[in-house]
Image (cartoon, rainbow, N blue to C red):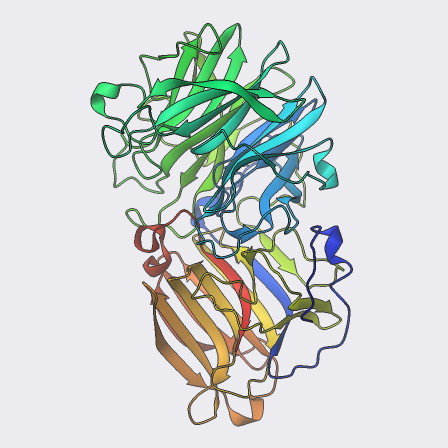
Length: 560
């Protein structure tokens, strides 16, 4: 199980996920199933899913959405940072019912995440369809890695995106592609302004012409926005730019104000692609920063928008936002929302000032799909397929085959790598997609040493996570433990002895989130009776405490 491999996700896993019976030695844990159930009160309203939809349209850590269309096929991508495979890609024909069809960066050769912090890696992908050569492009930044690059494909459904094409002359982050009506292509991106920044967060937007035949930028670039909408006010973090040509005008849309509660979306307009770009007097076109802090079920941090026009001519905006359970605390990361776009005096408006993001939105002619997951859904994997489901995530790029699929379930062999370091641990995870949820699994595992442990992890980053697992204590007794990591310090907060007659049996494990807290339970009688091992507050894994840009990922782990 230690040989090197190359992944062509998911098809390339077929040769390495060998079916075999589990040996259950001291390095190996077998998980028979994994079940996730969402239980957020906000999704209990009865809606007609043929003409209404819930926000978010993608729950959990699916930030920085970008969208494109060819005919009636829509494709949407989001960031994955230092998780592997990189950049999930979804398909829909109605903009609401999204089915993940793969991952764009599904081979180690495309995505080297070795030694990269969990909130480094791939940021803010942008997907575009170029009708002039019938090609799909994805442009992206690998922060702490290779920088800005492009990958492309003729058919996103084939999961065969190219190797990265480097963009050495494009600095900064958040590059986006624009294909003009004359066939010319451009890259617009965030970078430092000319000269020295004048204040903390002073950034600029730059424009390059891009040669699609040679896949390279042409000579020269131009700064088209310095600072933001109003430089006199010293706006921060103008970023995530997109250019659209609509009714003869060039619209430049950007995020401004940082990705926290002051996040907003702003719009500029020009007569020529190179500008000058003039900000609209009624900016921002989307924000929630002007709403009362004590409102119920708040949605915050709105921004990072991309626009799409339907085949019927209607406009929609996809964007990121957060759902805190208290003040600025949230564990689900930045999620993907969608709203219809209105036009006001030839400028796009996503939401009028003072309006709250709605959780239920009207949209006619929806096509519900059992493979799209919205509201309070249940998802279960019995590991009966020959390959792992697209939803599963690794921490960084796996370099050895320490996992396999057997007739008994998912087998994970401890690989000696740590979740507390910038390594590639034996961990396979699923995004926390609700404030309130239940995760249940059945695990067969028999440790033989005190440093051997297997079970479930609520993972936020290297320095903030909660481990719930089976191990041995100093007396050599099998126990269920909960280890809490805050700011890199690991502390055991609970330990419950397993009755002697049950120590070699398979156990059921359950993590229950109540929004503000997590509870950890186990059962040795197939879920008839449950023992609470610990309950701890959820804030320790929130972005407010742990920092970064990701949400919690709940996963299966084996260590030694």
